[in-house]
Length: 420
Ligand code: KDG
Ligand code: MG
Image (tube, rainbow, N blue to C red; front, side, top):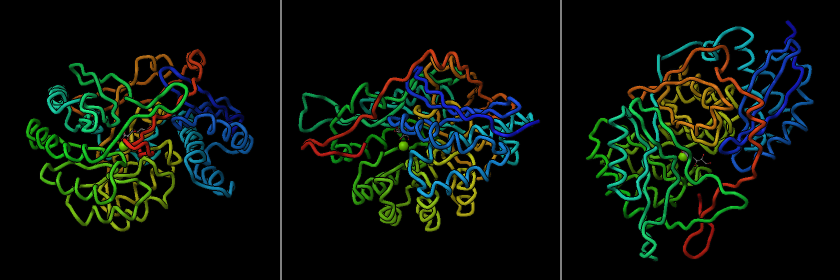
């Protein structure tokens, strides 16, 4: 069989939101797919892939996955950053998918086999008020959820007439009896230009401890609770939040401060025993390594599409294992089912798996992607197939053309830019 790469192509599709897919085909006609979606900057990644990566890869041995990763990372000289790493991720996932299809094995088997039988997941619950949030949490727990990521809206003290108007990002869910979930990421897509919402952190910090305590009381001690501050605190505000949430025993507090201000995590760590998680904005190992070496976090929130693919994510998980840190890979709506599937394979394999964020995609996605997962009692399992196990219908993908969209932004009441 001729395993040399014949072509690397990109497919841009927008069934409900934009996804950029990479398709690698060998001379023997075997095809692999990967996800290269960078929400709000899809065309930049597409240009890298079409103009620079595809010509480099033609004729390479598709089985030399590590070597290709190293070549793409190091021969460009300009390495790292979300655009280049997302492009590499798409190729890397496609090559693992292709290897699985060539050998007839699921990717987790190629990685070294299972360390567990099923994957503990978490979904988002959101309420505009504490009561609404608790009602949502009860529904989720009744449907089998064991871990919940909660968010809420905060009263606007400057404009009380506007009600609860400071809202955190969330991808809330609709539940059915088997805890199959339905919904899409809230507030991650604006049509033609960046939409601006208002945000002030102090009013939110006033409400956070009481709402969390009420939620903990409502769901009892055995449901894992996760809260994502989404970079909205200064370091000292984050210290306050972590200390005040300590009695609520969170599974973890995510991105309490701006993730690239890594040094400041030390302050939060020193101040409280609230477990910490970060990493969804990291693209390369050098961003993560100091946090692991200094034991500043408990969970790594990297995601496969922005960290360069299966090859580096696996290494990051192994290094985390050596440091006693678990995985909680980022699983938002703005990466495609191919990326979620690739993470599920790693979740099954890595010994230090912690929990997996996930969602049920918009039903329109099932026209483009065919994959089979089941979640029962909060645990996900998927049907075994060679490769990643996600079939892509290219004609359906082409029927949903790209629509330019931007991630919304935030400004404070004085009009200054605020983290999202
Ligand atoms: O596009 C941004 C989303 O991926 C992000 O807001 C989701 O923070 C997120 C999470 O933890 O899922
Ligand atoms: Mg997050």
